[in-house]
Length: 161
Length: 140
Length: 179
Image (cartoon, rainbow over all chains, first blue to last red):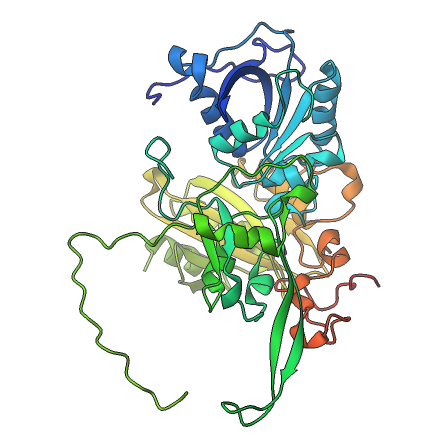
């Protein structure tokens, strides 16, 4: 259990990231493998993604998130949280800036379909309206273990089963 | 769920359907704030027999689907069901590779039932009065 | 009974006090909005917490301000109603400068013009929304476009629902799905 504050960089608009993708060491269905992910943490679901990242492998041993250098290859883009129509272009720009074949995981009801805000005047009804999604994780929010199961649907080579 | 991964007794993972309890009252469909439950049904007329002097109509369930892509796990459907046909299961790992894969139809919803845990034991110090045998109310 | 609220109600002609859950509410007529806020400030409510509104159809839009005394010893709500035909209210910024941002947001969400506040630029919404979304007459396109699953009934025999029931929270004059 992590009981002390974790240092995170202050987000800034338009600046290149100070840290690269986050390392996720996964163990599911008898398999162990590592995935480098970028989390687009838009709302509450990102807390569960962080719990999944902090609870696994190297990050758990270090007691803090293990990052690659900025510009390192990204395996998975996780979209967690509610995407508003005003923010959607920025998410798409981020996805386009990553080289193929970065897989996309939609984490939580809001990014799957708009979730509780499906009828809102300002919410994008699912992030798959603006970019292609490979795996949808149900939940509000999903458990951290649900992210691990979802990533097991993407094998080591990044190809879909 | 297991000693290595304990989950609270009413952990909200997925919703299971106990089909034999469902009378198609449509309350869960109407109360869901996300409109994520869809039910299709029809009625059949059963003729009079030894136990029923008049013919009666009964609702038959055709389709019961929950879209877990929309579901916000509020539990209103589970609480409102007067016949206890919906239950929480702690299984949270059912991600899918398509949006449609998150819509669970009748068979899949029923298949979650074995994963529904037994209700938690009463608190050790609870004092429970024995309610006694159920009294007949005069109605069948 | 709150002495702060009593002082405000006494100072403003036409004001009424209303006690419900939470802080006491002082309702003031629309024309005395500034007077009501100034009276609250004079009576000691120097901490401005928030200004917001809600659609109190058919009376109009109710604008509510939450004020408190230093160290939050006492607090109150000051409220007024802006009829739909008018949609204008004096700005609170002459009394509480901190109301500027709140009025900007309330203007965007409810369409109320705060006379005297020159900085009512768009804040959160995209330019193409075209209407004040938190008003009750704003149609949520998704709810109007999608057939409510709760409309169905076993007696429909799988055909088109006979009863046109409206889902909870949807006004009856919204366009129906498929129309």
